Image (cartoon, rainbow over all chains, first blue to last red):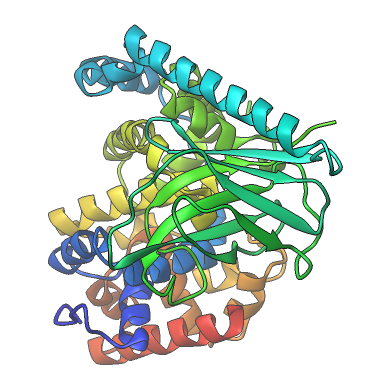
Length: 233
Length: 177
């Protein structure tokens, strides 16, 4: 089983993913899967599915109250990690991010102002931000529940052999649904007539996929921008 | 005191962790540490080692919060995934010998109707497996048994165990979609 390679059939990948999640792989096979997961979105997607399938089995282990010292140990270790996470606490960075947030609000306000003259005011707005630095990259506005517009806030480079794919998922849905591929820098109108009406808190994201989009109908690449629907009156 | 999971917003707390808010991690800890410790202890079989695993898991949850992708699964599920795999790494690396008598007998019965799995798709699909094969799946997932340990425990040839697991996983995938 450890002899499987990136050219594996979907069946072989799924088997490997299943045994990895089940826990039956030997140490070196586990290490190999963990290495491959970083670069193989198909394997990662298969593993994600197995994690979800088998998760209810965790309920078979009775809870064990942790010792009072455990949290203190964790806190101490986090303190020691400060070097790698201090960027969160750096004031100038937060000033910059607050500035970026303000910029987004201004842009958004401008959009709402200029675009709401002739049409109904949007009932939902989503600001999609980059997960790492929270920099806003796109806004989505919906002036009715049948169509949304994805509007870029700036230029965004996509590698030549890659594409941005647009996804949404509301609470209670089985999984995310693709809304198609998006060209950087272009405004895109997406009809939502095949989906239930927009909901508050509905998740939207753009992931980096192969040039033709995700081969499995679920996000496989890294998130570039993410946000949730907020109702505006 | 932990809330029923349907009332506890794991995802928002992960987002707060990603923003550097340590209190959010504390809230996740209070909500799930006992269950995560239970899962880890079943696998590593030792209380102190299990606390080490949960310690490492919370560091990983903290540092990985920013890259958590809610489209790929629930935030709560991710916390269990992180913890389980750390526990499995530990036992696979140390080749721990399982003290059979310390473990539950009859896991095959644990997935019967009244068990803690409640009514769900996995429950229904597990019930369709033969009892010995079902037990393999549960022993492997919950107690961290390897192929070899399953063969010894069920007094069945290694090749048969491997084939059972392969076919059981296929059957579960077909059944659950």
